Each structure stands twice: as C-alpha cells, then as structure tokens.
Image (cartoon, rainbow, N blue to C red; front, side):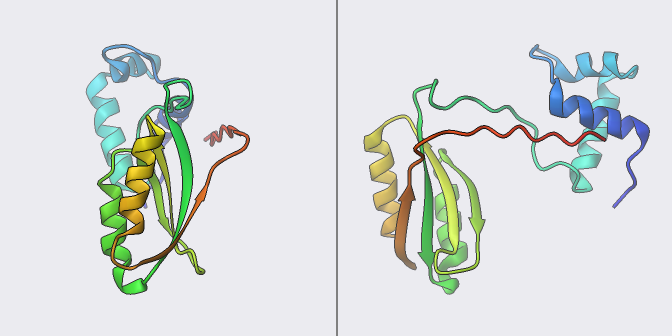
Length: 151
C-alpha cells in the first residue's frame, strides 16, 4: 500500500467531515486544499484503488425519509453463499451484506419504503436455494455512531 502524503491526509480528513453540498464538491474541496478539482478527483481514485477508500457518499436518516429498516441474519449452505449474496445485492434496499462465521453466516440490512415491500423481499430471500433459516432483527432504539479517523 502506498504511504499517505500530507495532502492525502488533509484530503481524507476533509472527505470524512465536510464534503460541500454543491454542484462541484471536489472543486470546492480543491480550493480549501489549495489545488485544483482534477487533482482531488485523481488522488481520490488512486486512494480508492489502493484500498484507503471503499465508497464516497452520504448518509441519510432513512426513518425521516419514510423508510424502515431491518437487520437480517441468514443461515446459508456454504455451497450457495455466493449465489445467495448476489441475489440479495440485486435489491436496491439491501446494504451491508457480509458473510460471518456461525449458524447465521450471512447478514445484511434492508431498507424499504413500506412494510409490504419488506415482506415481499424477505419472502423472496427466504425462498432462495440454500437459505435454511432467517432471523429479522428490528431495532427497538436507534444509535448513531459517527466514526471519523483523524489523519
């Protein structure tokens, strides 16, 4: 992995805490970093390719937008893990799809705009070949953890 420069650290700190909400956010960031927009974009691409970044995006309060979420734990046959995970990833509301150890070895979150859509999707997932059991774990209370890595 390439070593982070002082510019990289400043860029990553800014990216975690203050992406401007405007038509050209990377240009606005470039001004703050005393560089140009293309330099910011190119360096972000390089940092992503090097594994320092997974994604750049926003977080929304899904409840305020009318969505509901559930954490889903699946017990999946190891031989079907890949196909089940790929099927789940096709749903636009499925996020955080991870393989885990133990009986419930595939976990994901599902955000939907209605109970009916959630039930339809969960029914489809439950019927996928290789899915042996499913737990739907609705939250009783929401906790928001804001993790930032100051570089």
